[in-house]
Length: 323
Image (cartoon, rainbow, N blue to C red; front, side, top):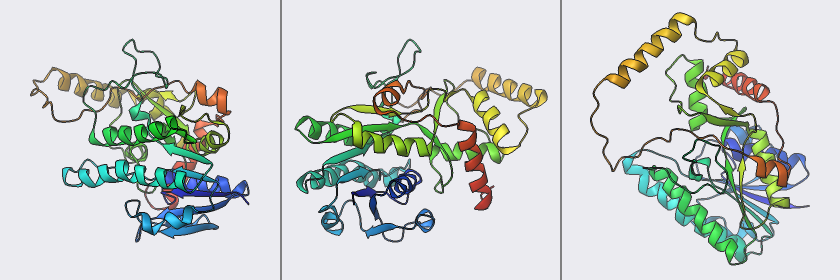
């Protein structure tokens, strides 16, 4: 039986990946930190748990010994200044440790999970691809740490390691318990809170498609190659996203009066004097749209229905009492 090791197996994406691997007949072994939320693993029987910490290789190194594939999903995420050093250690030193150990163990296929945030955005407004240079004016500590981890993976691949890098976009589907940044946008819509939505749009894709794309990357991906795991029809403006979520949840889209009030508020905020931004502070990108054609063409990444995924996410939040 083919054996896969997944770091961050209890995460939104990690658990979706574990379910698909199990359904495909793989044996799944997953790293989970002591005391971490394991609600998705309770819904995913069959995962062999490895309790440990990415920064403590002695807690998980032996579990790699007979694995055929490694899917490195685990990552730290925070905007809290006090927690940033720990996040950096996890995303950089932790990545170095797990990838090096997998190579030493002879793992034949390795997929490193980066983020769409390390893909640049073309200045002419066209859709980003894997070849777009990294160019955000003031990236966050998280994005910089993920880019450093990604570079470790690419350097090891250049030295002959069987490593493929994937870049998931914003994901829709059941199980986003933390919630992720995309899950917070969904919950903000459901709870009628202001959306922190990028004005240039965001690419959305079903989480199960991202998980399948990762498996396909392990099977078909070229070592050292990067793949955006997104949806060809998933580049949604805020209005598009609101319309999708209104249809998925049954909540009405903003009426003309509410929409007019929000436009007036945005206009007021734009014309109000603002202090000059501090150069040391990160800024959110203006858009996270992209062209996922490489993953679709080279890997055969599926393009499932976005509305179905949105409905599944809404239903899961209802079941969990989060909406």
